[in-house]
Image (cartoon, rainbow, N blue to C red):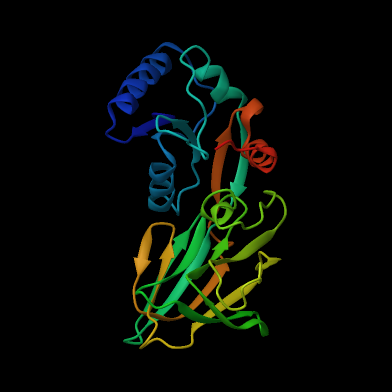
Length: 256
């Protein structure tokens, strides 16, 4: 039985790394079993995880793209020892349930965030509930994000949302370019929360709901919650854990 599976995107660098790792595995015994090595960028990792949502495998990402926040750095010399020493974290995705203007319901999962975005030149007009409590009666904006801790340094950070620790057990609700109320900064809620986002004017102000990269257009009502039944087991090098990457982002000073 092959204890280690290697998959990659079609990028030439990814294919070269895949070839190197395959030779290393053929020459060395890998002590850990049920591992899938994913070579590519963050997008390819998200795609792979979603395809394997029912799997109990361990996923070890190797970056061959530009940023690779969810990935490990490739080391030809240490790849086998890094696999042996890697530490596991377990994350659960968001589940997005969308009712569109035809009253059809569509469900998708998101590992980083669910984005509610205006679909036309008109700003979105939204009402947001956290459980039975109203978070905001009317938000006029380009949209709103619901982000996981793993996704809090992605799109969420770009809209000035808070960075969440992996063990915070929280979700972030962050507005995108709010017009009214202009100074609303969003809200941090429990990851056990059910968040309900309603389009107050679907005919005049259509919106899209996007789970990572999967879009549902003409959304009327969106429910977002953590799907605790799905568990993704991710492996990270000891000196470069996902939590450490999040901490680095919190302290990062950008130059222009």
